[in-house]
Image (cartoon, rainbow, N blue to C red; front, side):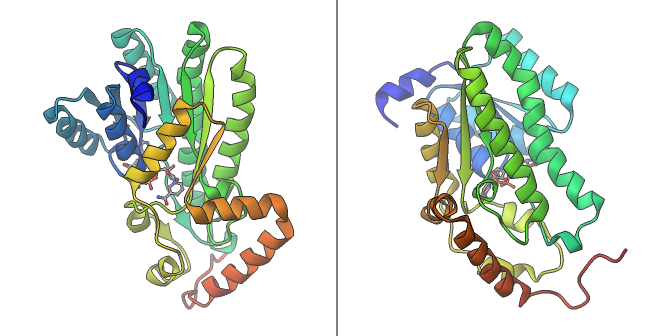
Length: 282
Ligand code: NAI
């Protein structure tokens, strides 16, 4: 991040959801280091408080706010609190997300709803809470974290893929609507980032360790946050993080049929690790 760009973040009120861990924590940390006034929001309120406290001990501006992004009213309250305290909210990072691995035949309504409610519902609630104020002020920046699984089909992660494709569509459309109103919108699509999500996510129907071993090693959350903030400050429409993710995205635009073939090959390898008796029974 250049000095010039860092200056733009100085004293800027910023809210990061899912900030107690992984990419959200790295984003919040980097923002605070650049001088932003950061609110670390997470449904894990104690985790967010511990992280904010650690940042404050370094002399940085950080407060924690317990927030479940599925709670529309509380999300609106959290944004209002910042607007009242700071005068405005300049950056909202809709980052909170969860994953549940598995095929459609493994999934019941709970596995669909839980993922869509957080990954898509949480972003919608963020837009409802923050966008009107940004439009009224004629400035601000919304950053929505989707995934490379929002740009290409991803077998074995059916509800996650559906939720992230929706976030991609929402974000790209909002960017067009928001531009003439003075509000910037950036879409973030990471490939594999080494965060706790891989230990905490449920994986239905497959042997977890064997599935994770199929994936290439990812980048650090700090590296991801650095790329995201550079893209945000340059007001880029989309930032795709990791070489593998960029390759898949490029292939999808070049030849969707090729990506379908790659998906089938990957699924064949995945199904070699299917647990005996897996599958949802009607
Ligand atoms: P993580 O599991 O390390 O951190 C996610 C944080 O979100 C946790 O602190 C968790 O408590 C919080 N959270 C979960 N549900 C919430 C809710 N309803 N309300 C508020 N907070 C909630 O995960 P990671 O890897 O940092 O993921 C962050 C985002 O990046 C997610 O949207 C994820 O889908 C996306 N992503 C991650 C990739 C990866 O390889 N780690 C790849 C592509 C996208």
